[in-house]
Length: 170
Ligand code: 4NP
View 1 (cartoon, protein in one colour):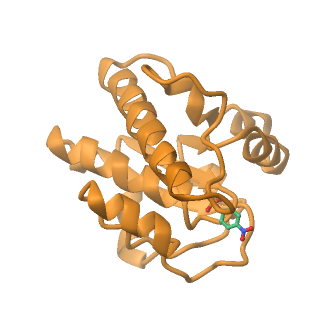
View 2 (view 1 turned 90 degrees about the horizontal axis):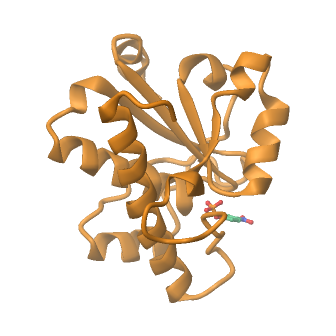
């Protein structure tokens, strides 16, 4: 993240971080889906959005070509460069959204303080129309897995945004 982006962060009302394993499929898609929802409501100035992965093996890479292609069909341009989550992200962000239970457990273990563990949320808890206990990893699957991820994330991001907009507890 650039210095400008770092400086900007402190002024924002909500700082949301989306986390998956590789930060090349699910979490960069979640970040961009949330960005569109917020910009459609004209609230860009209130939000800092970012994504990260628990595994750093893809650091510096653009999202997976399959994820980018599926997202592009819905008009999302995924340009995030993969990065590994760092301990200081727990200080920076208000909420950290895990895509599945494995991400959730790893994030809670990594959190430096008890307060920080409370920032970790399961993305699937905000689904409104779909029923799923996780946003499933699409990496080793086919096209339908990527479409499923996008469907679930559009639903869950909208659920998160509605709650924040209403001032509800997440
Ligand atoms: P993501 O998907 O966690 O949604 O970015 C994956 C990306 C890479 C790997 C696994 C899942 N991998 O094993 O390299």
